[in-house]
Image 1 (spheres, rainbow, N blue to C red):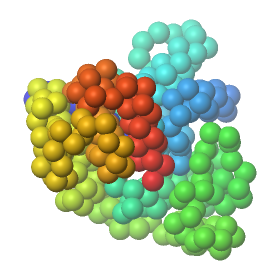
Image 2: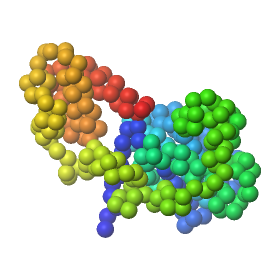
Image 3: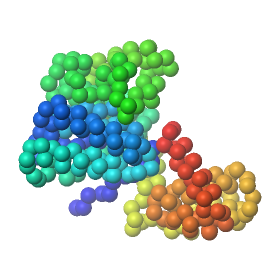
Image 4: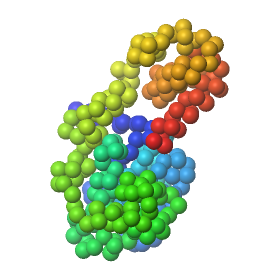
Amino acid sequence: MPRKPRLHVPGGLYHVILRGNARQDIFFDPDDRQRWETLIGQGVRKYTHRIHAYCWMTNHVHLAVQCHTSPLSRFMSFVASGYARATNKKLNRSGHLFERRYRAILVQRDSYLQELIRYIHRNPLRAGIIRRLEDYPWSSHHAYVTGRAPAWLTTGWALSTFGTELAPARRRYAEFMGSEGDQSICSALRNGAEADQRALGDDQFLASIEARWVPPGRRPSLDQLISEACEGRGVSEAELRSRSRERRCAQIRAEIGLVAVDGGIATGAELARRFNRSQSALSRAIGRLRAQQVNK
């Protein structure tokens, strides 16, 4: 059975796991991890994703990545291919350094952000490498405790879930990291939901992902997309095409446009003609809506 296509959701939080080919080592000395982190930083600047947690093990890595508008695959390809080329050159070898396909699980943020970060940071403990989290230098745990973080790491969002004041939030974070948590949650963070291993969340979250992301062969036409949106929001297409600047209609046009563009259903030019709008104005409205969703 062919693998299901990856889920790309702008603003989505992903648990990413990338392993060495045949589980072989990918880091051979501290310089290798420094080179990897340099590429991570370059990738974050290039694709404007956010890294909320990481752990570099000897033969695999874990990341909590929040995507911007570019698919996660571009970021991962940039980092992994760049690192593999440099490492093979250093070792005077050829062949695959990583498994061909990284694992990416789209995670419901409100329910699993804290659990995901705990799972990532406690990976060396589960592997029996260390006895205390602070003994492992290659994870973002230290940044959460001390505030000393690389420029490409974002800790504020997750820490804010532990409290509004920084010092108490760090203490609560440290207390939370003191236990492993529910084993069923750990398993789900590794494997995804039973219904779809590409995602993890409650039924409503999984249903919303299914509604938002549709494979190419099953994508609705632009006519269908507009018709469903109009029916659901109680407006007519004539209202959306009118020269009225009513804010509600502008919002609905942007919502339709975001789904259509990100889903490969229509281009910006096609949408502008359909809604009797300038392409630049409509593109700005779609961009604002996309940014709002990413920063939620």
